[in-house]
Length: 431
Ligand SMILES: [Zn+2]
Image (cartoon, rainbow, N blue to C red; front, top):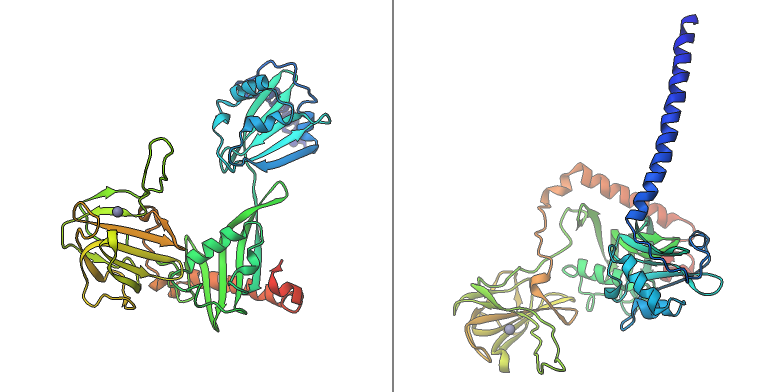
């Protein structure tokens, strides 16, 4: 025990030394860090700025939240909070190395902190999905700095009963329409939401909620979905990047990336409207694939032929309804595929016609169009990532464990007392 004394004293000495070094280091780094922080931003001497600076940025104070609307500029907005045109120029300069305030996109969220006199004390702008710009009015001018946006995620369960549409109760929720769109796309190849759904059909969704500053921001990843549609139960579990049913089959379906073997793309998709000065510009709601005359044209996905005839400028035209979400169209054909007529069901890859130049066309090509919920979308921008081989998944222990875990969680939620018994909760049960 005696021998331990000397090393102990030496240890104490070492600790003191270490403490001194650490303290020095901290002082140094705080000084150095401070210098660096100023270096990373720009200070402009604008002494006329009314300021209880920085203090108010810490105190809750009054915060005006919003997002930039169409035709609105950051500067018009700040003007309302006592930032003069001259100050705005300085503010623009101070933020320049982080983001260009003169080119902020519509919908960009902002927060304006106001002092007691109503003037801006600090201003925040989410210039990307993960970073924000903060501008603080200090007695020495504007201080611009960039910070990561902090999000928290929590799990939420949404369940309800179909009214006019399956997810009707979700329509009024913040972020609901976006979630509905994602679910409709996910199940597009399994459910025809326009035809299959009946009032009384049910849904159960386990989804991540993304929160920020104590407020709901948006729905994140969908984890699990169970739909009871016309007496049939359909389940989908997120496993990696895909959704699978309990048998290990992928839920998602895809169209073929291109329905024809082509030489080059002679005209791209464009929604350009009539230009007031340049005159008439016609939108092009499809892609033109230049291909040799007579090349086979294939159905981009399983579906029902809804049109197969000559139609004005389209020439010989085939349209296919794949499901409640997707339709495709194939124009300028030289002839139709064998047995292709209205009402016939086709398989993905089946020949529905041959490339030609019928209708208003200058050369042999296929005009190919994709419609999602009735609106034309750019066929080249759809998700064509192949679905990973999933047949063996059903036998995979990890996959089975993921299912068991999720089903257990769901059954626990459903046996919770407030669940389905309360009629007010039957529409939107939220926990
Ligand atoms: Zn075209």
